[in-house]
Image (cartoon, rainbow, N blue to C red; front, side, top):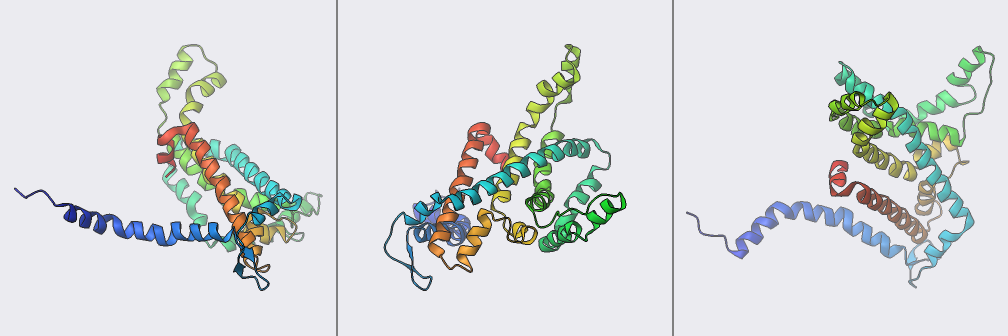
Length: 286
């Protein structure tokens, strides 16, 4: 029999197995996050560099009504995107789960991801502009033309299109695990179709609903490419604001404060999700 490993041998085994992943997470996740957090307390220099003194002045700027309005627009976009994804994705997940060719339909659902993200957004620009296909179809019906682009509506439509699969996939996984005998039992006990759905079906899909909502709401709030292209400067979200601070404005300190604020909001959403769904819910989300 082999002798028990010494503490040094156990440490070496842990270092070999866990060490590379831990080093990767430290260098590319934890360290950049700590640097952004530090930068959020620094001051913008005359040439855009980060200088002393340290303070909370960057966070105090977040109380400016202009920035609060930008955050409100981002929050509204996230909520509307999640709500529309729910209305569209819930019946779609059931349709996919019950369809005999669901493998093909799932492939078609994921097919747009094989195309570059910018190309897909530019496609919506072509469709929604005043001389685009949508106005041409409406014109054939004697309607329009309408100014779909640039607008918040165009940004919302493209955002829903972009993140809808992220809602459907976890919900589809939950629907596939449904115990349909509970639905039959509800009918046997005299429940009407609507009552049977809310009592026997909907509770079983809660994990997929919560996971899909988190996976849609968080990236929808932080998106900036869609608003840049389809908003054309008229729709400014917190992602656009962060991009401007690290780009044209060169106010890295304030941009870092905005990033930390957005990360804190995301962590709060994940915390609420964990409280509602428990540890198992986080495991399903991952």
